[in-house]
Length: 309
Image (cartoon, rainbow, N blue to C red; front, top):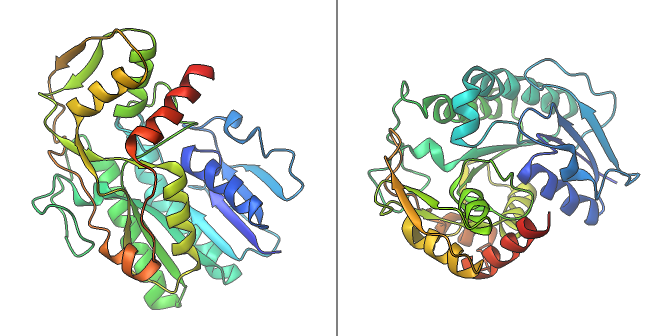
């Protein structure tokens, strides 16, 4: 039985991946300090004998006294609300946390996967965004702490691959949604669903013409798993290339939830990207992966989870 260590293992993506891996027959060690996650995310796996939880901040050194075959570094605040309130912690987990996680992977001769982000592309001047695009990032803007933390994490991961010959994977994750997202996460899908289910005004920033692509969590996990097992050592976009305006997303959520909410418009935040859509040619070609769950199906499942949880 191979062991997978997941930093941020009780977070939205980390907890879904942990359950997926346990079902695949892996042993899972989740490392988390619950800064932006909740232990309720792992209530369905907490008693599994092949699951272990370590309450620890990966920005601090960590000793692991057992074999680790895969290390997935998923720890980080990930929503604009989180990293605007936790800028230093975001930078530390991207720098010190990545360094510590890479150190464990090196010591254990483990495959290392970095959960990077589409935010490394910033407010893109190329559309859709391929992995070869270097990005358009404002390092001192309000989103800079997250963007640059992930860009630095990618650079350090590549350096460890070149210098220490670690087998590394870099997943550039685009907008993902599904059950276990926090109601006050701050991102569009949970915001809109929470407001719609309460029949409150649904808040759209700007005129809503900015675009995003939305990948359902189970599709993302399948892509991450294929990347984990691959021999690819370069960044790979993992996301759904179907693009929606934020205004269309808000209307869709209101309709699917049966809400009476109206849409209200507020000022667009500084440096909010105008477009965001992955070119997934590499994932389709090398990993033989592409998403299969449409936005309507994914939103229906997510709305039902928010309604009943």
